[in-house]
Structures are given as C-alpha cells and as structure tokens.
Image 1 (tube, rainbow, N blue to C red):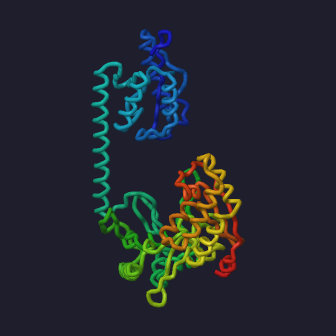
Image 2 (tube, rainbow, N blue to C red):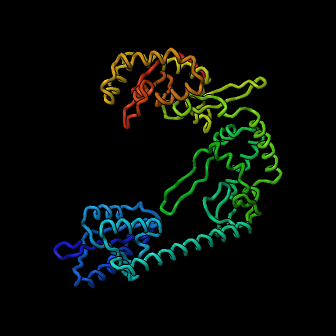
Image 3 (tube, rainbow, N blue to C red):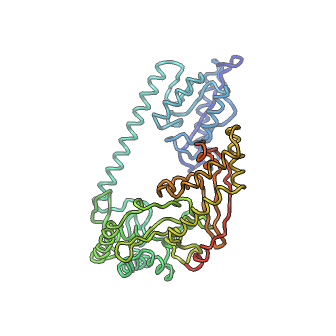
Length: 461
C-alpha cells in the first residue's frame, strides 16, 4: 500500500449547486482545507496529500455521473492512491447502493476511506460498521423527507393551491399564485372555441399561426429568452385537456377546485370534451395502426430528416385508405414541407419493387460479397448471387409481416425528395438473409438512389 513509507491521500470534494463557486474561497476549498488538516495530523503515519484536486462543483451525490470522481476511480485503478479523504460521507455519495459499490471498489484496490468530521476510518471493522449505520439513517431521513414533501404537495393541491412547475399559457405567477394573463387568456379561449368549431387540432394550429399567436415567452434572470414559438397540435391537445383553465387543479387522477380564476367556462369545457369523447368513440370503431401492415414504418424520411409516419382514413363506408404522412405536416400544417403525404400502397409497392431489383444488381452483390468474405472466407460470389435470386423468386409468396421484417433487416433508411428516392442498404442484412450472419457493428450503409416517377405525384400533393 505504502510507497517508500508514504501513504498517498486523495481529497475528494463535492457541492450539489454551483451557487458560490465563483467566490475566491468557496465550499470546495473549505472541505479541502479540513481534509488537509486531518492528513497533517496523521503525518506520523506517513500520510501525505496528493496535489491533484478531485472537485465536483455543481454535481449531485445521488448518482455517479461526476467527472472528478471518475478521475479518482481511474487513478485508484492505476495504483496511485492509498487513502480517499472526504469532509463528510455524503460528499462521496448520497445513495446506499452506490456507496456499497464504492466500498467494494475501494476494498478491491486496498484503498482506505476516511471521513474527517465523522471520525470514520475503514481501516478497522468498527469504522466500517458505523459507516453503514450512519448511511442507513441518512437514507431513511431522505425518504421520510420525500414523503413529507409529497404529502404537502397533495394536501396543498386539495386546497387548490398552485405548487410550482412550468407556468401554463394564459397565466402568470404573482406572489406564488396564478393570475390570469389577459393577452394570453385570449389565446386559450381561441383554442377552445376554434376546436369546437372545426373539430380539428391541425386547423386550430393553422388558425393560431395565421393570427400570430405563439407559446408563452419566458425571460430568465440571466437574460435568456425561451418560448414564443409556433403552437403545435400536442400543445393544443394538452390545453384542451388541462382543467386548470376551468379553475381546477389536477393531482394525479383527482381534480380539485383551484384558488385561481378560470379562463373558460364550464359550459365550453363540457362542449369541447363532449365532441372529443365522440371522436374517440369513432376512432375506436376503426382498425388501429397495429392492425394494418406499415412496411416502411420507422425508415421513411424526407430530405430534411422528418419521418413519414403511417396513418389511415375511412371513407365511403368502411373502406380504409392508408397513407404515409410527414410528421412536420401533422404538427405545423401541409404548407410547412415539400413532401406531405403518400398513398401507402403506391410508395410500398414502388419501394419493394426497387429493393427486389437492387439486391441482384452487380454493384450491390459485390459489396455484399466483400462484407461476407470478412466474416467467412469460404463464401463465394456465386453463393451470394444464387441465394438472393432464390429469395427474389419466393418474395410474392411472403405475408406482409414477413416482407416488413425483411425490409427492416436490409434497409436502414429511405429518403424521399422531389428529385427521387434514396435507399440506404446494410450489406450485413443481406448477408444475414443469405446465411443468418450477425450484423457488423459500425458498418457503413450502401447507398443507392432511384429516380422515381412517384415524384410527379409528390409535387402535386
């Protein structure tokens, strides 16, 4: 443990918040000085303080994601430290589970742990016992405190009190209470009235944008401004379902009368939720997305990286029409993007036909062959070619779910633009198709571009 009769001591310090760290002499310095004094008192035992500082300023003790403690671990593993000294136990960790792992780590590397103010030294069994007892009580105290806070929040919300958090659009906080923001309140009323009139969150979003109505703007003490952005469909849904706007407070599944004033009437709330409930019942009577195959789900994107997500509509009785619609068009309206929507059958049939065509192309075959040789030197180009041609011949007999699995296996990404469709293939997926080989980590996709007649339809939609 000792090097030439010396015991090398590393001092670890931590402070949960950054407040005060800018001062010339801060909490971390005070902790270090206490540890230095303790090490000086053990000079007769050969203890010396290492010059390296292990300071975690602004990091919680509830987890181990701290840069200085990671450096401390690395130096211990390299055999550079004999003793770890802290001001108090909770400076090292506030979690019993993490602390137990730390003690096991220290013991594995023959490192002693010392807490200056609590007179604990793991060089002896009594120190280890007292350390675990104190830590158990500390954990118990934190859990009791958490329960008290939860109970206080629940009791306060039952009284209708505002308990903090992000201030909702339509209100400001004055003296810890919600006060109606007259300007923003008009936006809230507009959302409810427009939804009741149109029954469409997307139409509400478009109407809000046309009127120049945006999200709440917040200015922080450091001068940073956030918010003031376009309102999306999710915020519309959240607003329509937030009882705070009828003067209520929600706590978990319970609703209580609030201390603040309502922005909309109970009558308008009931009307809106009546049509929302009716809409939900209508949707429940049609097949869900999981009932219908979406072969390209998760791999179809536009050139800006926006996903094209599967959806459907029901027209002329019970006939279902499937589409892939741009997620940006859903959130911000059709005018916000070039690629808006595709009939699912058209795009899927085109993509599947191109995949069948491309997987037997000489260029892709050679790429797959080169990848396969790295894994199995006995594989020949003829084997790869024959396997893929055999697969091509049975394609028409596969069920949609099987086709979907294969597409997800061999295609990493399909990018649709007004110029064409780009396919990103994973060669290892094709190898696996041939010989059940595992996917190679970090491989580069093979990119193939196909000009598409479908783009004419894209430009019209």
